Image 1 (spheres, rainbow, N blue to C red):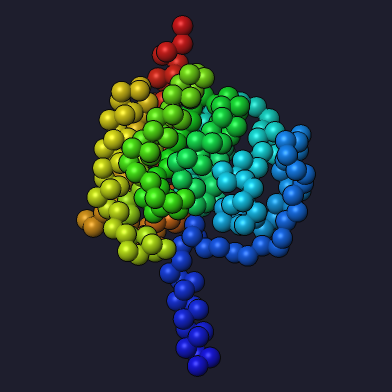
Image 2: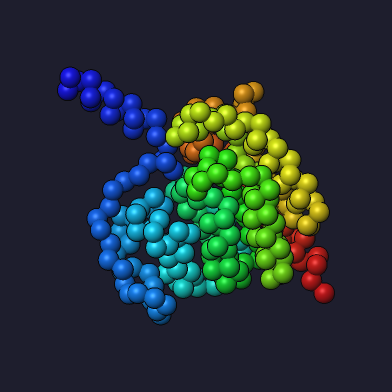
Length: 263
């Protein structure tokens, strides 16, 4: 019986992707009540997107990068904002972030959460370019049922906020996904294609740049091969190596577009 339980536990860990795993954390005390000068806890160690404290008191996890934003010494060349795919990029392909680019990805997040923290984590840093890549967790319903219209509204709002503040925009495609290990009943491949078609067309209408990571990573089933993303969702170093040149070209193009619009 113990052997069976051990096997089941191991299979569970293998099946759960990094973005969907929930690690228990010690209870965190609220720093204060109501509107205060310092609303972020002084005990952030161990918190993640699914921690009870974050879910109840900081749904968009605005405190995640609050201190890092204060310590950003100069205007970044680019801010990459998104979910775990953006967050994981820093550790597995750090060379992209040594030339004035900073990452503001949070594992598990959906487009409404990114929109909530967009002004704080992007606009106030005054980057030349913002790279927006979000949608995987919307399709998985991480923050509840949603629709394509809700998703496009959130992305459109972020693009308009950026452009109104003189920030050039790169819209990264939703990465291929044939299935979600943490939501095995869903089959999102066709929805990914549809969202990417909208992102590509919307980028043209708004003067933004579309970064097509889907084309670089997709297999015939609309997913990602295990040698590029072991769980089919989150790229490994080899997967990010295919994404890097797409990102660099898109950022450079967006910078040119931004310069061309200046008087």
